[in-house]
Image (tube, rainbow over all chains, first blue to last red):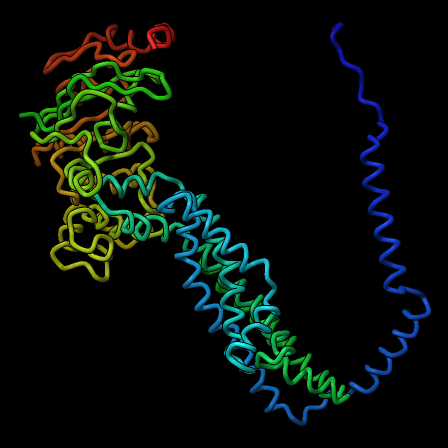
Length: 263
Length: 259
């Protein structure tokens, strides 16, 4: 065995570009810490304030529970209506964006660009825009969730559609079926389970964002939370946070059990 | 008039000649078996005959009508007359066996898929689908999700789908290659029945020489993109068939030389 290669060394000096990249990263990090004024004293003071907040938040104020419950229901409505509309619109978007179902590559790249744009702009910004367009309230929240859902779900639907085996579609095409029939007869059944899982996750995601959308006035429980914080009603704020927690965890359980049944 | 006919079919892929003047005719009521090693052009010929692949030169005729070069709705109408059975079955796993059979009618009913969805399909189609399933011996599985069936059963569902299509020609591309011998024979028996009882022109590509003597009314051997032998109602000498496979490497080389 005269061709035996040497054992690789334990340590190899990194290239200078690696050193440089680390140096730049470190410089940015230190600059950030300084600019934010991240000091131990401030952190300690923050912990003190946090203790003050908790002291005033306990016990949670159960007084206005019915108002909070209605606001929570509004948040759920925003999430479910927004996601439902968003998912239904995502299917045609995904079919146009998937390589194997798009009518033309130009259509594909255009639609993919639209989806990417919807995804890149945060839902909070969509909500701010729609509050201007349709006024304060849940409608602005619903519209923001619709766009956010398309940006997320259409992308995953398209990726799943591209993974579909060509065989079943070919079999339906060979019966003389048209393109739309092939898509509905072969591709949608094959991708249904995965699309359902994505849609359920979209609802979970939307409930969380619908809470924060309220902070900018797009309806729901976030409006209540923002008001309580501003009025220093920490006990009420704490109760609102608990309600949100319970609802989010409960929906995650429901969603997990549906997912188990579908897949 | 044969059910399916290829006249001097040529096909090349990226400059590589795969079919160089194939003549083939598939008679109604008979089973024609197509033999050939990997690389002989067998699968390409099958795809050209089914209309899933376009040919470069030559003609393809289905029941007296020329079908090569068709596009759009004319192509779809001609595909309707040729049912295809695939090696990998290509049935839709997530829907019922019954729905898979109904799908066979997708090309010939108004509204395509909407016309064959199990809850919407007219009673006439639903009865016909049940009859097709009964013919392949799977009527009791109608309501099962198709993916829960064994490979042999899935291929029989694919044959029921082909019957549902009311085609004049059935092309089966290595229909038994993924099946055990027992399930393979059941599938071959069904294809013979389809030829005899429905008068369809049946073309089956195979690798199993043992099945040829039992099932082939006509046997065509393909080598290096050309017809090597074509015999009707007579046994093909075993060594002649084996030669198709033994000279595989040699054939490949000469094919590349001529390209």
